[in-house]
Image 1 (cartoon, helix red, strand yellow):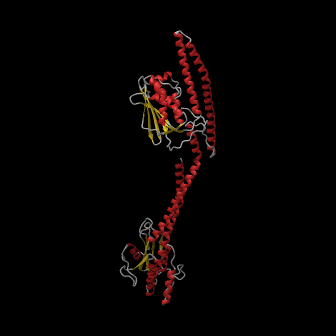
Image 2: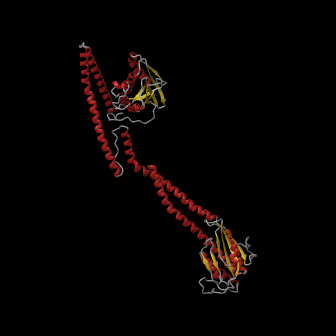
Image 3: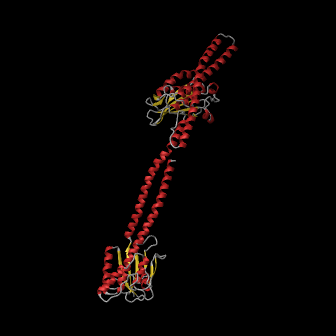
Length: 545
């Protein structure tokens, strides 16, 4: 959920950032292209006006202007006359005087703008402007014209004044610059901003005489660098903003989902049997209401289960005394009766009392195991197993059953278990194994190292075993199988085993033993276990197995 919130937040910030920065970047790119085209077209138009004067001073001024333009800008100037073959000394001749752009300028008087590519621009910007003879035009090039064209004169001073007026009369727009060119020549000009091919076009009147054309080649490498800076800066800025947004999104998402994680932790602990688990009442109103409802339900359930366990423990404790007295009474009756039939009835009654006593004792042990969990302590596993086998071997010898201890675990293997828990576990498992084992059978107790963090204790018998369905229900309380233990057992032995092993952080499973019988596998945590495990507080009610 946290990941989805972060991704959603970053995606929202990314969309907002793209909606703001991408149009701005396109606008700046278009502005850069337009400003460059306007500037180059203005310079080309000025040079065309100088070329149109036709005298030596104007040509020298044009040559100086072209040289300065080449030195100070990434552009070069090319000049062609009306016939397209000879240049006006000292200006150089273009390498391709007969291309389409020069043809349009010299034949039709069109100003062309070629960026070299429909996508942004190519390696260079090429602008070709026609030059008109200024002294031979007819039409409206009068002194009161808004273009401010100067009237022709005889002296050099007047000519230089005309040149300055022509240079100063250019404007900033593509169409306007082309229009001024025609206005300086005294004709009429029609200008379009750009056609589909990216060219600006201007047409002169039929009475204008075209004396040549000026072409400016402007390299776009600097423009490309500026374009990369425009987009690169915004890309880096966007990445930085998205990274900050992801960090802030992670913090906000964790804050928003913290109440839900606390509720999930409570539910997990509750599912594991810790009925004391409660959730802090924090977060938005909805999660606070949910936390209070769950806490109230858990509190009521905890109270009910605790009351039930107290009742079972008290009842079991109180029943032990009358059952013991009843058994003593039956033993006394059996000793004073000579009638075989009466003695048989008394023995049956005594057997039932013994079974009831076992049941009550099992209930009391289970109630105590659920009500209080002792802190685990390191125990020598093999030593403890050997001690319990010494206790059970006399009972096994009476039936000719052999108990064998095997396994690779040595005396140094230590496990974590509560005081007395492992003893009760072994007693219950060995009691069941001894009851189902045939005479002169074998019970194998195997102690092995299951891994760096686990020790394994297995008890294998040669009894009838259990089916898969019986193994699944064997740990239920009061469930008794169809074997020998089912007729005399209380149905609490394996339930007590599971409760005690689980309280110590271990596992217990059942499976078929090789060659027949049942294998009880008990996994115990070793002292070197790095897994974090918190024992429930003393007196905390726990759910049973």
